[in-house]
Length: 140
Image (cartoon, rainbow, N blue to C red):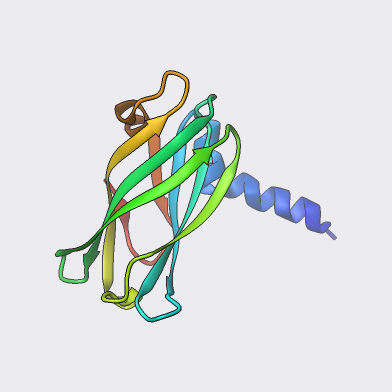
């Protein structure tokens, strides 16, 4: 019988965020869409830093498309600092005008801020590896 610590280690080893971090990437996973407290929808993201240097500030521009394929919500996601090897789990409200079942796709449009030793938004954008565990695609 496996111990809880061994199970957690096995789960973390299989996590897309950890796998991408091992390859020198910034992993950004759309983990889930959850109903918001006041209606609407909330997106859960899991991020992992495998680029070998601390990201002091990271801001992502993400667009949510409705089921008809129309851009509905434009978000600026302030991730904050992302230390090397650290996994962060963040929730962002998509607002109260778009329910989770109506979200058809999420797109990472750009990296608008990426600060750290020798880092700039274009380099961070190039290092990002996207995955989705949600029922919708998450892509560039």
